[in-house]
Structure formats: structure tokens, C-alpha cells
Image (cartoon, rainbow, N blue to C red):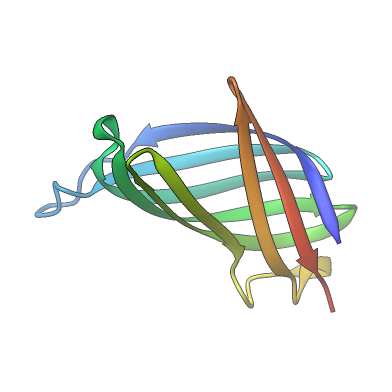
Length: 127
């Protein structure tokens, strides 16, 4: 199955944890539109120097809403690396995280950015 649409994201710096000043922390708030009508909250950890074209991040976000009309929650795990301005990004649905009508969901999300607009495509399966 597939779902497509747009999303808005707000990132807010989180205070560094004591002794971990070299790891960046951001809090994420998202609103999804289209085939996924949902809100999401998450946390991102990052390192490197994006200004020079090399950095990496990991994030977990918890999504709550309706996917193609099915109500429930699920989590997304992000892993991203940028090196010499080439990007490698994987966003997967966390196994076992689905609830409600989304119990057993599995799949991946891809995103694209066009100017200031963010778009998603989710390819997923349900039992």
C-alpha cells in the first residue's frame, strides 16, 4: 500500500545533556497532511558539521492519526548521513510500534523537499 502527502516540521533545540555537548539535540513537532492525517513528536541527535557538507543524524518520532483512513499510532526511525554533499537517508517504520488499526504495520517513508515544502511517500504493509 502507499500513502502520499505533505508535512510541516518545527525543530527546536533541546538543551545539551551534561557531558554531551558535542552531540546536537533537537525536538521535532510535525503535522502530516494527505493520505496520512496525523501529528508527530520526536527527538533528533546529530553530529558533524553540516556547513562543510558532512554530518549525521538519528531520530525517533511517534506518529498518531489516520493512515488511509485507518486509525492508530506508529513510530519512525531515521538514519541520515551527508558527506561531500551526498545524502543517504533511511526512514523505517519501527517493527512492533503499530497500534489500533495500524497494528503490525511495516514499511518505509521517503521524503522530498521542494523549496520550503516537505513531501512524504510511505510504502507499507498491514497484516
